[in-house]
Structure formats: C-alpha cells, structure tokens
Image (cartoon, rainbow, N blue to C red; front, side, top):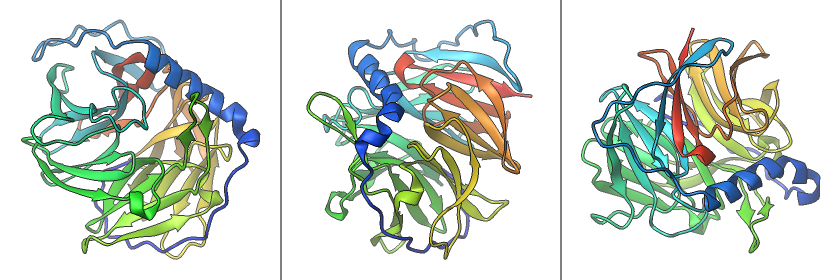
Length: 338
C-alpha cells in the first residue's frame, strides 16, 4: 500500500477472469461482518486536538509492544508516516467503502498520539471531493489518495486540493492502495462490489493501474494471479513491487518488470490488507487471524497478534513502529517493534 519512490518501470500482465463468488464465500465473511459493524456502530467522540493521550498497558505480543492507542476516527483505513513532516496521516472512510457521499476525511496525528487535526482534509469543504478514502502515498509535499474509482492529490502541508484522476472510464471497480515509483503512481483494484443487501461480490477484474508522469492511465498488470490485490509497496532491496492478496489465494506476491504474472513469495492466513517493507522484512496485516506478520525468505513470523480488522498499515522507520488502523474499532494502534 504506499510511498517509496524507486526507479521502476512496469509491464502489462495477463488478462483476468471473474472469480466464482461461491468459492470465496468463506473468505468474505470476515469483511462483511466488519462492514456491518462499521455501519452500525458510531465512532467514539474524537480526542481534543492537541491533547496527548495516555497509553494503555501494553499486552504481551511476540516481537512488538503496543505503545499507544488513539481513538476518535471513523472507519480508518490507512495510516501513513510522512517522514518529511514527521506526522501521521489517517484516511477515514466515514461510512460505506463504496458510497460516493463526499464525507470522507484525512486526519493528522502527531507521533505522541495527539490528534493535530481530525479533519485536515474533509470532503464537501474548501472545494474538496473525498468519498471513501483508502490507501495513501506521499511524494514531496503532495499527498495522494485512492478514492473508490479516482485518485486525488492534496497539498500535504495545507490540505488544499491539487489534482485528481478519474479512473471510472478505465473500468476501475474498487481502488484500494497506491505507491509511487519513477514519478508514476501504481494503484491496486481489488475488483469487489457490494449488492443491495450488503453482500460482497467479486466481479473483478483484478488489476494494477498506472498513472504516468505524462498523465496517461494504463493497466500495468491484470489477472487472477493477483488474487484480489489489496496492499502494494516497493521493495528497494529486491527491486520489485510487493502486492498482497485479500482473496482465496492467500499470497504475498513479488512483481517485477516483464513478469507475465507475479511470483508467490510466501503464503499465510490470507485476508491480507496492508504491506510495508522494513529493512529485509515484509510486514503484512491479516484480517483472517487479526495479526501483523513479518516475512523474510518466505518464512512467516507473527509479530503482532490480537488486532481485529487491521487495515492498511503504515511504518515509521524513524522510530521502528508499525501503525495499525483498526477499521471497525475506529482507532489506530501504534506498536513498537523490538
């Protein structure tokens, strides 16, 4: 899901096919329950801007310790550390992930857990359009946001809208995460929809879109081998993209220019959402078993446990922290890696 800038050029992968929803019904139970809960339970009152929070007692966990819990969000989907400003951005869907209701917002949170500005960027205010914001990426002073079937740009310091790209005409279904390489933006399309009664469908196709420096929108990769692509980031060590699949493939994928299909790096519990690279480790969040795991040389180590609905995680390299949005809990948790 995100922000590393790396000189990389991608190739178009193979065409995809629609997945039979009957085969994946079990995988979708967790997501559907989460969406129902998020819709029914209102968020708790936001913390007062500028107020530092008292961290709760950290639970025992292998490889990490929870240092802060920050409540007061509304369906938080992604957390991003902007190292230039030393600030955390949090995307808030604020309702249905597919509703074009223009009520999504982006928060600014300080590393001490204080909410600097809950609605730093807010749909429907100051000329901003923001429906269901999900993945975040930053390049210089520009904050990029995946928003259902559009990609939007804002000034990372002022929140002012700068640019937008509509991908509906390219067939975008459910834009989820994004990352930046060689001045181009790469965005995953998980290919899911919701019917009138809230059932999750996967009509596909599974794709990674590319927006080039020339503003041209293309499909950089597509195919069932992407496995309902969710999180995406750049691995500077392996000089490749890392993509994690939410669907039944349960795979952590590596993808390089010229690949006909991504390569399976590792497999795990599945229901994967966020992905970050921390040194030689790949950190991945899983809805299936409520964990964040580290993958190195194909081996899985569960670093953080007991985090329900862990969405698009972030990584604070300055402090060696994992930043976890608890989507159905309307909070973020900050964990210190050992």
